[in-house]
Length: 153
Image (cartoon, rainbow, N blue to C red; front, side):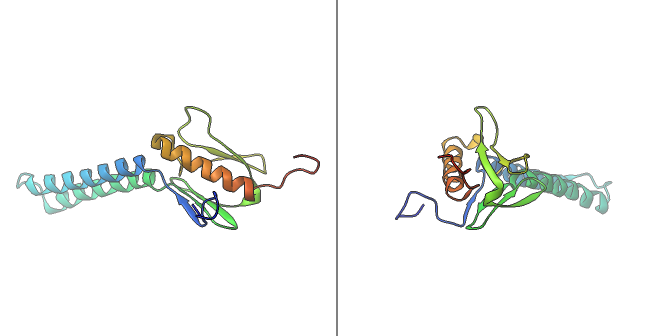
C-alpha cells in the first residue's frame, strides 16, 4: 500500500499462496519420484520406458501448474484475471461488483454485460491474507469501477 493513502499502489498482483505451495510442491515430489523410479527399475525396462515414466511425471506436474497459475492483476486502466486456462482482460468500468459469499473458495466479479467471472487469484484458503486481498481489490473497484448511476449516492 501507499504510505500517502490507504489504497494499494498500482500495478498490484494478487496470487493464492496455499494452493501454489501445494501444487508446486506436489509437482516437484511427483517428478522426483518418477526419476527415482526410472533409475531403480529392473534391467528389463527399456530406456524409452524410463523416459516415458519421467515424462508422465512432467505431464502431471504441468497439470498441477494450472492450479497454481491463477492471479489477479490490477493496473491503472485494466484488470487482468488469470484462471487455470483462460485469461480475461477487463476495463475497470466493465466490473460492477465483486462478491465472495461465506464458504465460497474464491470471489466472483459481476460484469456490466450481466455475466459473472470467477477470480481464482484470491482464495479463501489463504484465510486473513485472502480477505485482505479481497478488501484491497474492493477499495480499488470503488475508486475505478463502474460509474454511479445519475441521482444515486
